[in-house]
Image (tube, rainbow, N blue to C red):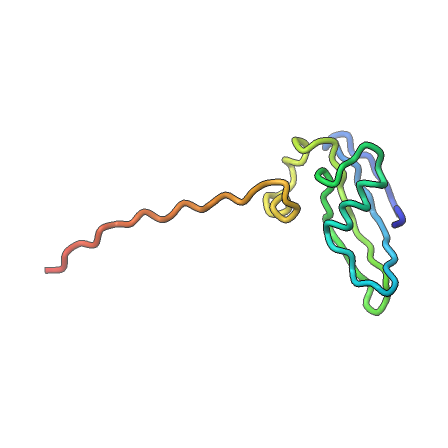
Length: 108
C-alpha cells in the first residue's frame, strides 16, 4: 500500500489519506482488508476508527486507489453519515418501530 497524499484535519480530529494498492493475481481488497492495512500505516490507529470513503479499481489493471479517514477516537466519528457508520460496523442498526395497528371500523 502506498500513501499518495496525507492531510491532518485537526478540526474534525482525523487524518485524511489518499492511497494506492497494487493487487496482482488477486481481486479488489475488501473494506475490512483496506481498513486493517490503512490502520497499520498510522501509528496508534486501530481498524475501528478507519473509514474508507471511496475505492476505485482501474479496469483491467490490478490497481486500486481511494480515500480513507483515520479518526482519533470512536466519538470523533459522529460527523460521518449514519449509513457510512452502519457500513463500517461502527454503530448497530436500530430496529424500526412497528406501525401501530388501527382497529378497522365496522362497515354498516
